[in-house]
Length: 221
Image 1: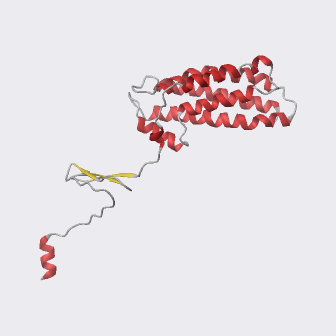
Image 2 (image 1 turned 45 degrees about the horizontal axis):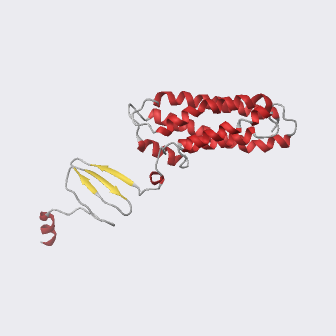
Image 3 (image 1 turned 120 degrees about the vertical axis):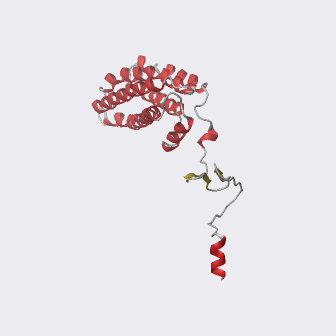
């Protein structure tokens, strides 16, 4: 990877960062939105400015070996930024006036169990590794300090999801019928039939249709 290519990749990250800010706008007023979302949004200007400051100096890379040293860092940062963008967009599509933690939990698990604050912390860490490279001038290398301070502040925010919420749970299925609604838990748990009779048991249950009394009598006749 050459210097111009690194600069091009940084430009792509700037576009993703701008996209994250735009995607946050429709969810910012959702009732119950976790504090961590707001803290992540506050750090987007720092991320964007750091990338803009690094873009031009990155064009001066002479050695391909030096450029390759940053390839992994930029790829990692881009991957996290894309996931953060995806979370904001999906929440916007699946929410009305109120934040739904179950929707967020599903998205997070699908994307590798990285909460929004975890992704932003990783982005800040990657940027710190990027600007600390000796190819950048001293004033840019000094940005490692505000990036580190931002990580410390972000760590103070309440988690957007508790660790227990990220644990895999037993599968569940809903079954709807004319006279009842049935919930099944696969594994250890409780089975409930709502709007009809209620059954509860721990462990496995087997249910089968019981033939009418008249049918049994005909068979025995």
